[in-house]
Image (cartoon, rainbow, N blue to C red; front, side):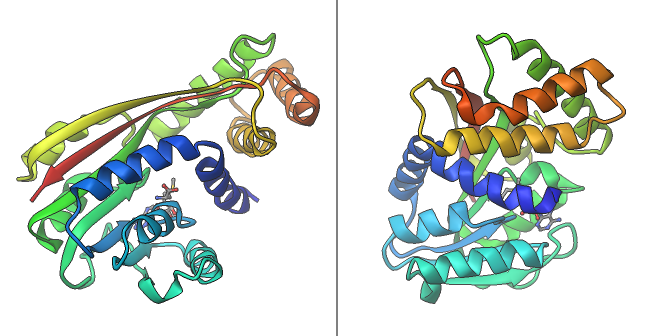
Length: 261
Ligand SMILES: C[S@@+](CC[C@H](N)C(=O)[O-])C[C@H]1O[C@@H](n2cnc3c(N)ncnc32)[C@H](O)[C@@H]1O
């Protein structure tokens, strides 16, 4: 269940936060070489791979992920969008020595670097894979989306996020790293950082309620032993009633770093 929801959640993130994704892709497009060869690491359901292939004519994208389910979904989306000829998929665990990915002008890592067991290894591998002058892009989440701010349910959502953050920390995920510093330490130069404060207010597109539902379900999934019975019941009630609400918002913060090899 969790994995299906992850694919759907990533697709909905692209749809609901399309202005953020458009801004980001535009920025990267202006910095990238002509007809770049791009490697999307931890490509997931394909948000970055598809948007980059669309934005940058003549680009070629190698989408790398450890999950065959993600790559199969990405492939079917790429084919359906007529981009299949410029996007290839490679199944690999990027915590291991990287496969030879060929000459690379751009490495794109969106919400994936925090999953690496050893981000230092991943950054050194990215450095080794890029041509001199090539562009590294790291996008990370400062905060996961909040949907209930300013409503009577905001406190229970907040407690859920706090417990989910502890859980991620205990699982060894590298959230809230100083990626700018780590990128510099790995030898990259010209590090630029941009912060995106996303705050979407009603009326929201229809997809936003489903995005809230799958996000809250995923959050709820890991908290059985961590929240009180009354909080769990309150969250279940919120999830069941999302479709009929007109007070949802979407608030999340992202930071993106660009750097040169
Ligand atoms: C949160 S998703 C982000 C997906 C996509 N980049 C996006 O922005 O929507 C993280 C992805 O990293 C992949 N991943 C995690 N650890 C990995 C590893 N060691 N090697 C390759 N991929 C990995 C996961 O399978 C997942 O698809």
